[in-house]
Length: 98
Length: 98
DNA sequence: TAAACATATGAGCAGATGTTCATATGTTTA
DNA sequence: TAAACATATGAACATCTGCTCATATGTTTA
Image: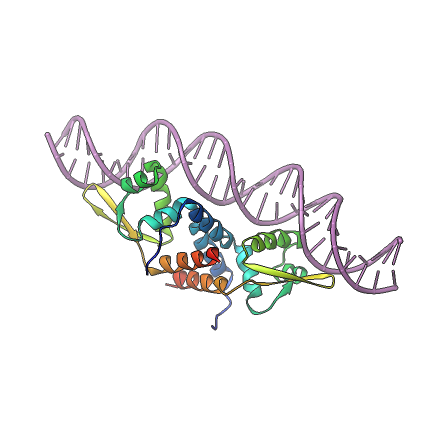
């Protein structure tokens, strides 16, 4: 495949993106959102972590555009932003499974 | 695509893998190795960093099996271990380019 | 074999990161 | 509108991480 060599900014952004995947709490959150959207409290319960910790991580995931959210009454539902998340994680799994 | 939910160890390994991609020095090194293998000194020169810094990072890349190496006289040549590296980086680029 | 060359490695330090705790913000309900 | 509920946020702290510096290890050459 042909590919332009990224410039400094793009390299930095790329590293920043992977850094977001590089934390097991955030990876766990993404896996929870694979099948269905979820609110903050339910994610926290599922991962057995505090609401605050999850909220902080969701903010990072949102900033990287890996998840989106929408308000539903008192709750805020989070969901995967697009299919890149799945593809990137799949490739990661492929690698470690070898 | 069907997928098993990874267990705790696998989730941890997955995060560890992405953590390796989550540093711009290591990303830069991987890009240098995209087209051809290189020795440590040349990589250091190309990235304008010390031999020691590069060597430390190459060790991490090797431990994650993202690169391999072979001795050639006094030098040690490093190369990409497999195509997952390319695929993962490509997906990352796809994401940030949107 | 001694010197030169190439790379690896350990300790130390400064900056980055994830969690907790307290509290603020925003929405619904009584 | 006050209370209850759900989430967000900032500060503080402990841990982790990447680089530097000094030096060790390994290979070739004179």
